[in-house]
Image 1 (cartoon, one colour):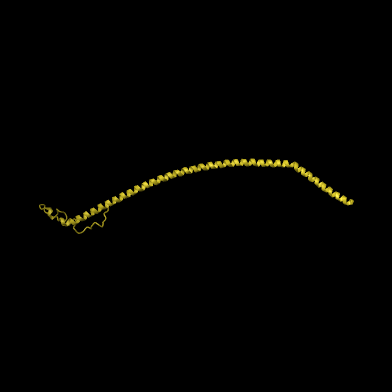
Image 2 (image 1 turned 90 degrees about the vertical axis):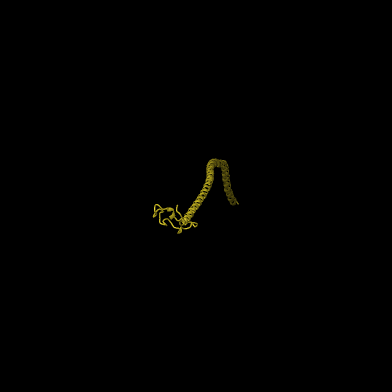
Length: 176
C-alpha cells in the first residue's frame, strides 16, 4: 500500500529520529552502566505522535476504501439484479415476438394457400363461362342463320322488284 500524506497527518518534524543521541542504546556505554539513563523519551514524543497520526490516517483510508468497496458491491448487485430483470423481460418479449412471428408466418402461408385455391377456382369458373359464351355465340349464329337466309331472300326479292319497277316505269314512259 502506497502511503500518501493526508491533510490531517502532520509532517515528520524534527523531534529526532533513529540515530539521534548516538545510535544504538548500547553503543558507547560501559557494560556495567544502566542503558536506560541515556534514553530521552521526550525526544521521541513528536515521532511517536507522527507515527500515530499516520496510523490513524491509514486506518481512516482503509475504512473509507472498504465503505466505497461495499457501496460499489451494492451498486453492482443492484445493477446485476436490474440487468437480470431486464434480461428476463426481454427474453419474454423475444419469445412472444418469436411466437407472433411464427403465427404470422403460419397465417401468411394459410392465406397464400387460400388465395391460390380461390385463384384456381376463379380460373375454372372463368373457363367454364368463356366456354358457355362461345357455345351461346355458336347457337346464336346457328339460330340466326335461317333468319339471315330469309332476310337475304327478301332482300333479293326487293332488289328484283325494284329492278322490275324501274323497267316498268321505263315501259310506261315509252308507252305513253
